[in-house]
Image 1: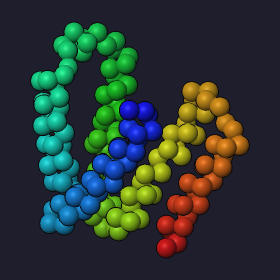
Image 2 (image 1 turned 90 degrees about the vertical axis):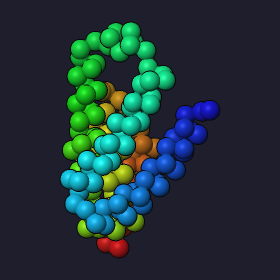
Image 3 (image 1 turned 180 degrees about the vertical axis):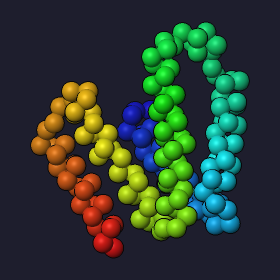
Length: 140
């Protein structure tokens, strides 16, 4: 399977999840919702770890890489998810999800600034489309 199909599958899964989460948050607060969502992550890790992971590969990761991955996991799976749940609880899925999913814009800008990635006219056009989409959702 190509990267495109993996990305499309990811989009499909991530498209279903906010609907489940909005329903789940209807009778609880975002902190409790995050607790239960994290139980799902733990269950997935246990199943994945039991069948796929190799302990030697886990030990072979250098400390710098491990720290960056742990920081990324904490920010994405805890901090951002909690912030997302607050928005999802009080807002419309059709607005909260696309706006929160505009993170490629932030990633692109940071990658150009800190990783030395290239900036092109086509990429600038994509950035402009993202900004227009956010603006349109804000107005609508």
